Amino acid sequence: MADTARAAKRELGLSDKPDMQWRIIGGLLGLAVGFASRKVLAYAWEKATGKEPPASADSPDIGLGEAIAYAVVMGLGIEITRIVATRAAARKWRSWKDAARDLTP
Image 1 (cartoon, rainbow, N blue to C red):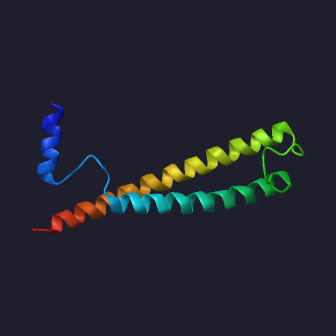
Image 2 (cartoon, rainbow, N blue to C red):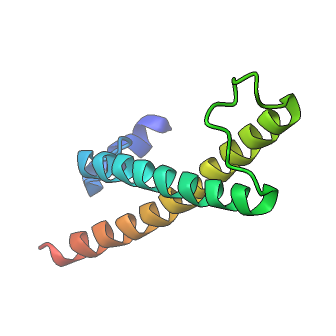
Image 3 (cartoon, rainbow, N blue to C red):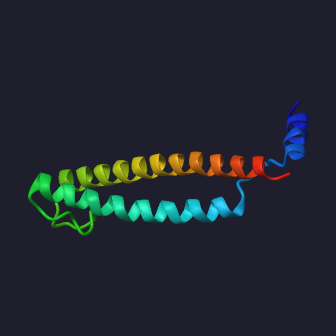
């Protein structure tokens, strides 16, 4: 059954692997979104706590609770932002690829 699906995809010009263009765009998008979301979350941390975000959560100068809270906020915030942005870009990329395929003879 899986071989039949693969053969049908091959006939339509589809593949299981993402194309190299999307790999490059997706990677660059992930880097940009990660950088921007880190800056936004650091700003939000400063406004919420009144303190600079920890430079390193491993520093003994920072309390354990604050280090854990910072790690959770940054980890969740960055990953959620990255997932949402990448999924939205993938949908747009797919629509562009489908439109381009429809235009080709």
